Image (cartoon, rainbow, N blue to C red; front, side):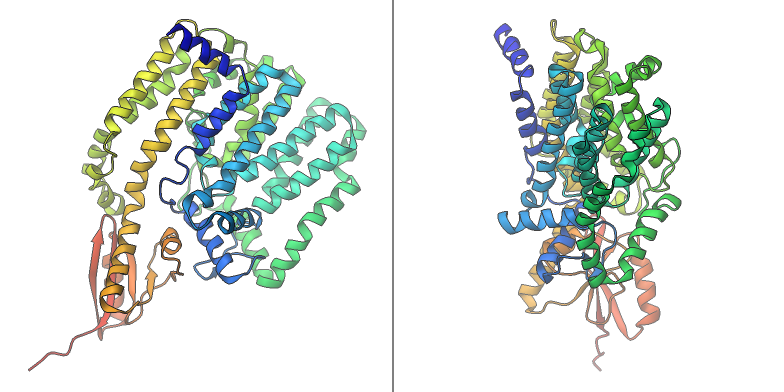
Length: 537
């Protein structure tokens, strides 16, 4: 047992620990579950349609222009699918690879400014944070955005320290790639953070001159302009109207896709986002005044505050929106002196999470009794959600976290890193299976039903989606699913809580046709519109 403990400690002090974390937290079971709606489904369907149509300058989703995001991540996904085939692993691979680069960039910066060992700890903290791993394993653009945003802010600090033009030039390159990945946030965050830091730190005049560094802006435009011209040629001014106004400005003034929140949303979400490091957050808050006196700490605190405040005032909120603001937190947490003590209380949050995983079947059973509508219909199947060994493996997770808590000679940071590895190994082999069974099983059952009917009848009617959008349905059918009411001879995919409204609509608009439910599983139904059979005398 003592030899195992010594080997673990040696591993954690070497860069091999980071590579092991990549393997477990980012790649273990990467393609083992279906793509999730809405975000993974939307990105992958848009990429599928890009490859199907050969249009690489703009994106379309179920045949309609998709203005949500710029183009860069779709190119990465298209390259991956073209190389490795049409599968979940290939769709998610670009995000996981970008997350690896993100962690390596963080470690490189941290080693330069806070020391070799603490730099490794910061990278281990990031990779083994559950929410970072979740985003890194998802077929969405956020890990790519966070890589470029982090590189920009790292080089802003390097420029402040060295005044070297090469660092300023790189900042403009990273901002252009961040904007090419997800839009104006790629420029707003670096410029705001740097400006606030210079004002609070009474920066010198030559530091402000970097804001109008002519070669930098030339590089910025050189990266962006070719695509902007191409997307305008493909979609006209509609893209700029849809992207800038609808999906950026209105995202802050109105709730989109039911992702609402409040000014206090991220105060509650942050401890969850930082799991298993949540306990260290309260240590950092207690030392905030002392941290502010150090210039690097001040820069990191401003970085976090800018991201936190921007999205706290947004009317559209999701936990991963402030993930880039967690990057400076990983660095600040890695600088805490308490990391090398033997604190056990910091594992309270991982223990609570492990307990929740153990009792998840009972929690879902209770939720199934009190939930109605679409989610209630899906939860009614809760007995089928869990893999065969879920109970035993969840108990093993709890035992492992408790063992790390009470291990006698283990440092605080070692307990946290190993608990993060254990939690991620469980979450991405067991919990994701539960989540996939809950959300995505009805989608795949609907597709199987449609394929079976097509084989029986020899006909493939048009399928539409009514007042719902699950783009993974289109991905796996490899067909566009129009978002509208069904027409005669068509089949509608509809949620169980909306089927009555659809039938009432069809009774008014198509009274000479009958509509009938041909399939029902969980929270989804298929409704077919047919001519009313002629009555025989």
